[in-house]
Length: 179
Image 1 (cartoon, rainbow, N blue to C red):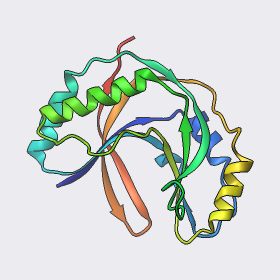
Image 2 (image 1 turned 180 degrees about the vertical axis):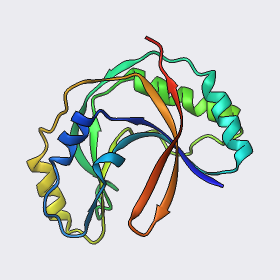
Image 3 (image 1 turned 60 degrees about the vertical axis):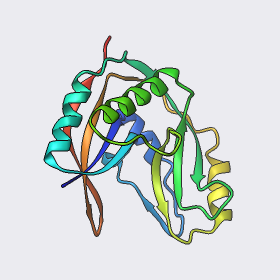
């Protein structure tokens, strides 16, 4: 079985700008720079046959390349004790269209539709008993955060192996977008 997700990678320069947000924050487990990505869809466990069906469905997907820029910082769940710290992004109709095409391709491959609405973000830290006031103070300090725009030219199918020191992501396949 493979634990799968679909993602857009970030350029190294953008990853570096995100990791510059890091600070002393009790209970924060920061995501490693090389692991930062934009998840289009978490799939979960899939056997070899299902993974092959997903790869085949993604080969048929055609979507234009587009620009994206990260901006803002926040946490999940909103209005409750923070569990995830994230960086947001500018509104992108092209990103939403790509995510919708990914969702439909997965449906074709036998994966049920995602029950939650797509909320584009980059997870930058997982929080455990981090005082909400400290999270809010960091969000206030970094509210002007913005990356340089970058070109999204492909998306990827990843497998994820959970370990005691965090997840290890392995790229299974890449899918180019149209210029």
